[in-house]
Image 1 (cartoon, helix red, strand yellow):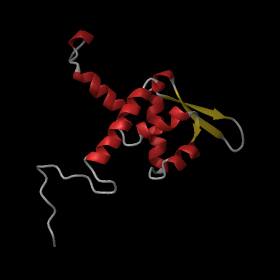
Image 2 (spheres, helix red, strand yellow; image 1 turned 135 degrees about the horizontal axis):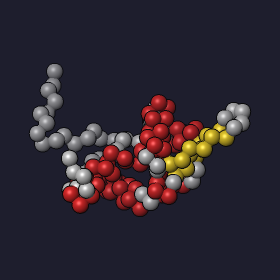
Image 3 (cartoon, helix red, strand yellow; image 1 turned 45 degrees about the vertical axis):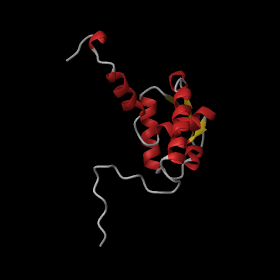
Image 4 (spheres, one colour; image 1 turned 180 degrees about the horizontal axis):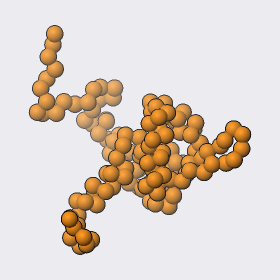
Length: 128
């Protein structure tokens, strides 16, 4: 086990970043929060393909990792808002770059609405 920061390989920082940001919806959630504070329902409407359970889970993980804050207002019905922390906001340029790359990939490698390209070592599907 490595005990000092100087002994940690550089790739571990990438592993840590992927551990925190990994998850299909985390960066999409953050992209909505770059616009401003959002309520749960607003986030859900903006991302109709995410289930309520998964959105809740991803929000909890982002909060636990210190990227967003959850503010509960004591009123009836309860009002809950999500916003970015300074650490979360520091990811805005990275998220924008990933968004640009994703659009480029979609437009040049994958046709819109087409299935994912097959990996070279994946056998072709059998016809029945």
